[in-house]
Length: 96
Image 1 (cartoon, helix red, strand yellow):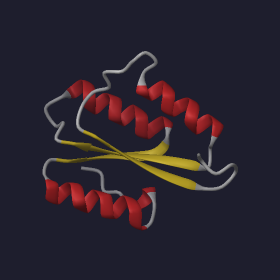
Image 2 (cartoon, rainbow, N blue to C red):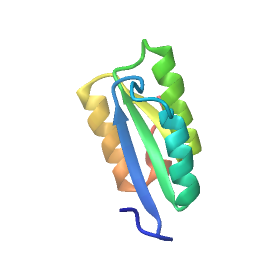
Image 3 (tube, rainbow, N blue to C red):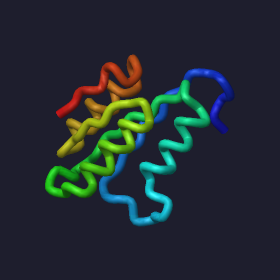
Image 4 (spheres, helix red, strand yellow):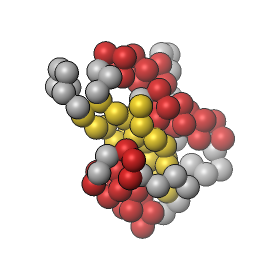
């Protein structure tokens, strides 16, 4: 469903570690980004500050997806991160 050869932007919101592996979500995103290099994937990790495994996974996804990873601890921060991610693309997402 992704546009072939056109720029695109995906914002992934996650509240926990991938439980559907294998393959890992980071591998899936790496393959997706390799097939569609003009599609950037940003990640907003919601309420995972105390979960190091989830933080590492979200950072991996943002990195291999050509985007950035940010975090939000409450709904106000989540709304701000989503506004930033959807306003001007990945460069506007605040890292926290």
